[in-house]
Image (cartoon, rainbow, N blue to C red):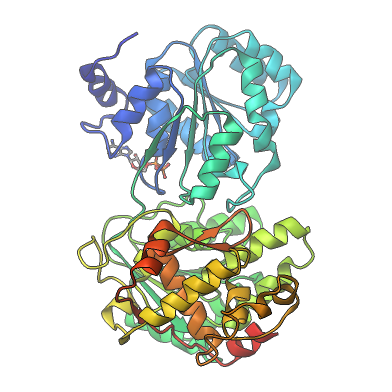
Length: 529
Ligand code: ADP
């Protein structure tokens, strides 16, 4: 069943009117059409949908598209129906359909009309649907937003865990294509394991957004004033301001309005009508700014959002990347400004304290990465891309000077000797500690863990007491990014010395470090407590 290159291009043109594939699309489509498993990791806007829509349209049978959001499914179904005379070419199968509608969907599938069938994961667990789908030809199963499988993703959904079993019940060797915009290696590993597609060909696009400028500012008591000033400096431009709570959303929207800025609030507490009214006002440019909780943004495709401000720091780098990713979709400028204070981190920790222990530990590990991002003095782009498992050349890479730290570099200092001390401390405590305990050990402070591992008896205990805890934390982060140390994510951040780190121990060389920003004194207190 070979499809030539010409076939693919002809179909692309025929169904979508595009004359060229974007990025890795062509290779993905070819792989899917060949009946092989695929795993696609592309940032939002990268063109993931086409990777399964085109193969579905080209092939015999019906492709099942698993997606978590009914609204998104409906949009896609409408879009597909728009390119065909055949209304039944795409359907959603869910509990909102009445008997007649379900019957129509089934008829269309059985007659081979339906090429794409969108289902929510919970619908797919229904025996009635499984029975039916067992009797039809399924071309492949696409699992959209596949990060929902992983507890390390930003949107874990337990129903996603059953998909492998269900797909196996639908037939032998049904190819699977998983798709996500979540780039962390840990989530990717979970997805591949859980979907049982270890043989999948992996297609990963770069997550670099060269046109976005990243900046972090300290959050003071006058953060509202700072935001007003920023928005006024960017008068007439579209922007999103994210806040953590609904209450803050409403207050800030009001403060902006009082100060002559056209802004609307948006959060899930408003009824559907109000929400869509405010959303439309923003999309139609009746207002410049929307002040919102994270409820705003999923599936919103406004190309010319010029800034995304975080009044409160988000709970993971992943979320931050997703939320800031809504800026500059047209390739034009996009300013991503986050206000940060360590107090907000503690607030987020408190939110989590009621949750199950495992969830808390994951949450805290993710949060520590946010702290590191906010406090680092290195290229924020490099930091973020490293977090996503991607190398970035901070001198020649695309968008290399597009962040506050690179524009206003802090002075660097030689840290060769301290790097050695840290490497030795990690090695000599048998690679059993997370950053926090390593810092305790090197600065010579006892705590329960340090004493239970008898670290206070080691030669390295206290060899770095001449420097502050913040200094060592900063150096650890920079060594992680430089690849001298590695963090074991499954074990919530246990540090290891890498091969590169061992080479450094054997043959030390220059290591230029920048000190982290010191945002507030509270930080110092928070870390010792
Ligand atoms: P994702 O799901 O990765 O966020 P989408 O599938 O929504 O991305 O695609 C993003 C945008 O790119 C859409 O507007 C889509 O029409 C457009 N697009 C996708 N593929 C192509 C292509 N080959 N040529 C031109 N535009 C494309």
